[in-house]
Length: 633
Image (tube, rainbow, N blue to C red; front, top):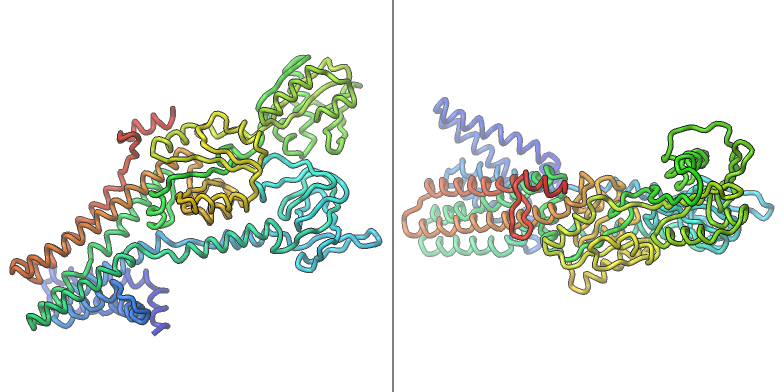
């Protein structure tokens, strides 16, 4: 039985397509060629083929003491075949199969990106030997306390403390921050981060699955597994509906001793509109979302999204663009254009992330610039027999002289959350300060205000930056809470804590470091340009990378769930009216099935209304023209 069940599951779409073709042939034979026998035979074949997987599922559910809708459908189809209503058996099983396929298409998720995340974890490390030589070893066999050598461009293989050297680390895989971290002796580094400049010797404090990166993978897998067991809405409802219809049919059979009437009760009670109604709403809602740049991963996502009352945002790459840019230029002396061009040309010879941001300022090339890197401080350039210093304040003061005005400007830009780079020549006749930071997405403020209008009670920003920098970045946003210095585990723990306090939390992120929080949130929303892992773990993906689409996602979710409930109501009301008509003598099998099929058409048309769903803010429904104007303000 298991093998048969597996066969039907594996070839579900092919079988549905085959039955669809057979039904079309049957209808053609009846209405075009008036061959009723062919019609009946083909419908019987469709009914039997369609019944097999439903019956096997019904048997499986009965084994675990669950009277599912599959049980009711099986009995109804068997009864319809017994009394010769082959067409009803065929239509009921076809609708049931179509509903399953539609639901499967919307709920299917891939785990490929989580597998890719595991592959990204470092596998080997260069272990320092007693004689100063290095030996490459598997991460799993590295002992605590061993010293590891990390060169420029290498991935840090384990969590550890620096015992010698210094350098700049890209820690985006762990804390999501685009700003490189300046690390020196005594500082902690994390597995999965990348050394962009410098050389480090570190002493192992954690390796393998015990590292921060390893724990990210573990938390993602555990939380995703916990979500995979979500019950379908229909199965929860069928717990009560199916036994009720069966009891009614049995009572009718015992009282009337009319087998055909008993089967008619089961056939008319078979919830065709209910079976197709929810998937149609789901597909229409998901289609509307796709048209608006929002990708939903199933109907259960929408049901959870409509309950959200609190949204937490990652900062880097979510509320911000995700890469450093020159934000401010303060020229204290000299020609601004000359200074910008000179700084861009000097920085073009460096691979430092901040240097890359400054190199974009000018495309005019200056030949014969000779540069030298001062580790941890910046660069010294020679041009036309004059020296230029480009780097931090310490480099300038050490090679020129202290300047109180310069110090004041540097402190001001630093307090505003900028990474600061200073350019000066020996006598400071050319002197400028560059402020570099990740800028907010242009639509961020509008998007957050829209969420407030839609009734979200609390908006929160979680950042790996220090608290002061995080507050500076979010100063112009309608954010209720700001939490800095948050590692991936901290973000995930924050989400859990808010859930324990009774909140339905949505988390929005874009990076590997966001994955634990995304996986633990009631609703996980990923920016489409984010990592594959973030997109895979998420429930909703903003395909167009526009934060204003979050409001669309919440609105579509509410409308879709309401539409599902409307379709359930239509299906139940139809069954109720059919039963009333059946017992009062106004409804028989033939006209009852006509009403039954008409109710299916009604729920399909009702579901299709979602395709033109427009978001409402403050009770006003926007037209397409108004919506475009509002989003482009």
